Image (cartoon, rainbow, N blue to C red; front, side, top):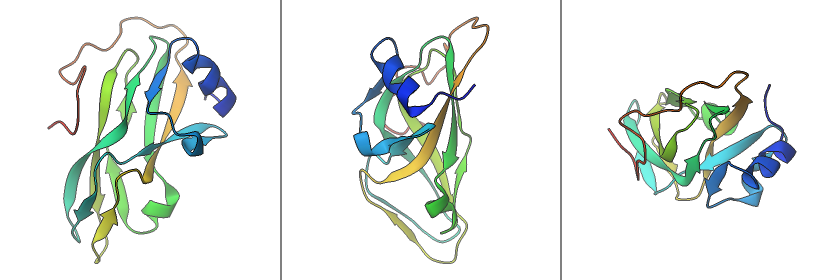
Amino acid sequence: MILSGKEIVQRMEKDLVIEPFGKESLQPASYDLRVGASVTIPPKGFKLVSSLEYVEMPSDVAGVLRTRSSYARKGLILGGGFVDPGFRGNLTLCLSNMSEREIELKKGERIVQMLLLQVKAPSEAYRGKYQDSRGAVR
């Protein structure tokens, strides 16, 4: 089940953390992540960029990341894109520019949708090497 915007807000009152929260980023069934620093991605180039948001996922919620369609139309592709239950930190966005023109992203632009999914039978929370990450991490 995908959490609605209303359910995202309700979970933030309980156990989900998205900081700083941007009211304009809340969508009917997703939350738009913003880029944490201005960056230019050259044609056919690749950059690792941190989300502005720091997230803490509850043990029964996972996230799926997708490029916002307005950026996909410009040739921006997101590599990877899954946030495990229990993850804490900034999200590293693996961005590729498939176009023939450079793509400029300004700090705070909404570039990636995060769909939040209810995990039916949560087990173990994330404990990987990216736990508590700050900024873009290789």
